[in-house]
Length: 355
Image (cartoon, rainbow, N blue to C red):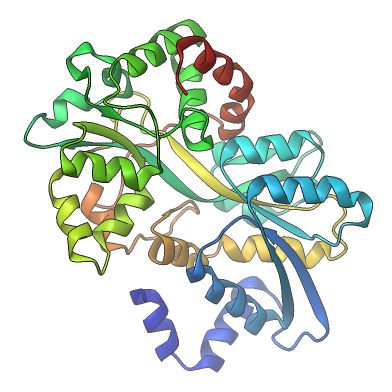
C-alpha cells in the first residue's frame, strides 16, 4: 500500500468527498448516474481512483477490463450500439490507431487543454481534443556499473556503438513500447539514420529479444547482459518491492535518462478518450478531468510509479525521485506523431532482422 493511499484513508471521508466535488464542480449527491469505462489499465491500485470519483459525484462506474487490442476489437464489433463512455488505453501508437479508426469523439474541455501539455494530447480538427495523456512512462537505459559508465550511454544513439557488441538486452522490437521509442527516433533522426541505428542494436544484442522489461533489468543485474532498455515504472516497482532480492538487483544498476543534453528522454503515455457513441458525454468528460486533477495524478505516481502529466503537480514517489531527483528533460515531439510512424518502423525492423 502506498503512502498516498494510507494518508487518504486517514482523512475523514466527508472532507475528502467534499474536496473532490468542489475541485471538479460536481454535485456530491448525484443519483442514478452511470459511467461505462473500457479500460486497458490492469493495475489494482487504480481501484481507489474509481471509488473516489463515485464518492465525489454519485456516478456509478461499470468497467470492462481487457487488453488494448481486445478493447478496440470490441468497440468495432459493437459499433453504434456500444455502451462505452470512456476508453482508457496504454501507449501512444494504440491511442493514435483507435483515433484513426474513428473510435473517439472530440470533446471541449478548457481544464484538459490547460493542464495537459500540448504534445501529450491529440487536437481535434475542429478544435478541442480527441484523447489526452494521463500519465507517462520514460524509456530509459540501465547498465552494469562494473562494466560501463553513465557517459557511455547518455544517448539512445550510443546503444548502437560497437563497444556494446554482445551486451544489449531488449524486449521484442514489435512491442508497442519499443515501436513508440523507435517511432520517436524516426522523428528525431529521420528514417534512414533510424534504420541504421536499429541495425546496430541487432548487432549488439546479448541474446534474441524475449520477456518483458523486468526480465531485461534482471538480465543486467545477473550479468547476462551489460545494458538494457526499460520503462521507468518497471524499475520503480523493483526498487519499491517487498522482495529483498528485487531491491538488491536494482542496486547493481546504473540508470540513464538518455539525451538530456539534446532532445530529451522518450516518454510514452497511458491516456483516455470519450467513446464515439458515449451516452453519458458530460460525465465522461468530467471523469477525464478528474484523472487530470492533482489527487488523481499523484495516485498514478504513487500507486503505479508513473510520471504525472498535469502541470503544477508535485511528485512524491521515493523511487522516481531517486532516479532523477524528481524531474528530467523529456522530448517534446507530439506523441501522436510517434504513433503515425508505427507501420514504417515495423518495416524497418523486418529489414534489419529485429524480431
